[in-house]
Length: 551
Ligand code: GLU
Image (tube, rainbow, N blue to C red):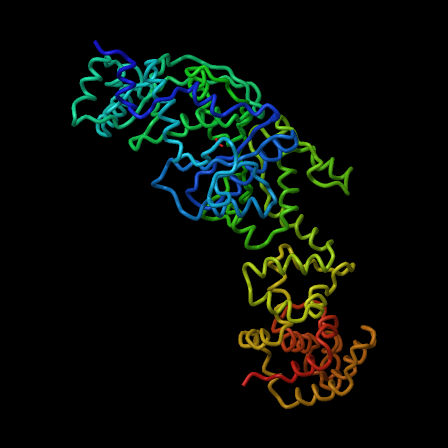
């Protein structure tokens, strides 16, 4: 007669070690009270939610002198994309979120004692855990086909029964060791998946604590959930229990979508006789869309993708400040009372996080960043803009460094004055706002400039420019400059205001002339203060631009 152990041995011939052996290999982290991690699946871009989860876990472990590591959860190999990990690491670095342990150090080696930090390289480890379950008869090989599963689902739906693979719905759960041995020894037999042998008490409830959600009471798991898939890689559940045990995670801070799996996870930890970590499930980030709250969508909301913040070169510090206001409602008060403190001095509490949902208000975030950029020095603004330009816009970077003083002067227009229109929300905005200052770019922009009214094609505009050029003096005060300009334009039949236009013999209005100046100088109908623009450009450039005609 075959034993359960023999079944386990024949299923996992390569596994020679036990869970005990593995636990000895990975000693406890005695000095680290909090160990937390992120477990991204490299399947697509980095969602703002992935970042928020990482930021929360990292902040929490760091404010408790703990460890924060990354584990790549790539067991769904069909959905994997190659560049996803690089993007995640790049984004973390950009925010200065330093990982204590990660998989791609020098020579592509793991950094940290609890390696490998990539799940697809931990197959052996999962098999050790799986073997233990088979030995204890807590898991079984299952060869139900898709068709068989579909029939079960259909029958359960028809009979209005609780759906799932449990009790006698599972053809394989009640096979004896002898029956299994016979099947396994048969050359043509294979076991596509490994299932948990769960209790099938459909009405059993379970109580557990969640740091964010507090006391939870929910239905226990009764399903014979798949633990190893066809490719013999684990599902999330087995991987979570094995990895977070061996990597000594104390706090599992993850998205709410996993909350309903906690009963299953507890069941697994208990089956292995292992300590259950603290759980904290983060409520979803929602967006207000026409007064309705909805999840951020990969497809429609650019801000769902971290790449967007990266390419726009959002001020990282302020993105983090904003996320802290979402994370912990006491942050804003703290900030008001501690204006000069570094944001990291604030200690948030997981208990204070929203239980149900949190609003990610993109408009508010933009205004926070806009205010911030309006306050920093022009030198800092220049440096940050240049940093971005080196990465995303090298031609613009060349222009910026070709004349640093000129660039800074262009950036600086109206900043730190009561009239400041706060033109920059991100460091990317600087490029589009000052590009016309550079003569080479201005030629290109001129091709697509807005059309001028017909009147400007006449001879007289040449005369006006010559006359203006002969008296233009950019060292005047803005008031004198304006008076002078007014005197000249009156001669050319431009009315100063509507009243003048109606009562006198003026033919044009001053807005037309102002538009002419804006378009000739800046190739745009909306520009920063014209006198400031002229002063930065200097007399010669201003006159050249005013005279310039598209052939
Ligand atoms: N790979 C899982 C996910 O992307 C990780 C969840 C966790 O943090 O445990 O949802």
